[in-house]
Length: 122
Figure: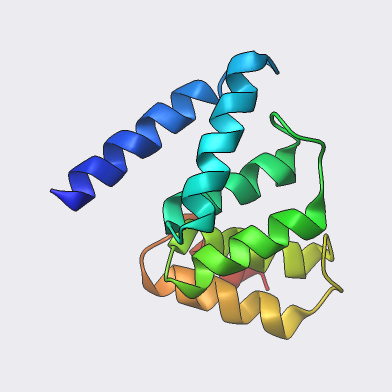
């Protein structure tokens, strides 16, 4: 049941983030941040993505890394893959191939195709 609820909430969050910046985006951001601060990995990943892409908030790579790391440490494969990418290109953190490989490997072991590809390229 919790998985279904998390999936539903994630779907609703994604729908809310698909438009431009509006009053609704501000409330979506606030709700995502609230859930992320409560330790919800999917919300932490989504908050990292918002900061990474500047969706609803000013782009901030250091904040993106912060939230990706929290989700990645809980085992979120998308966050692990994106954190690996941040290390690979040195966005929000110093470039570090060893850290990039570490996070790519964790995500790849969970079947994340992007991480598998990036690991193969590294």
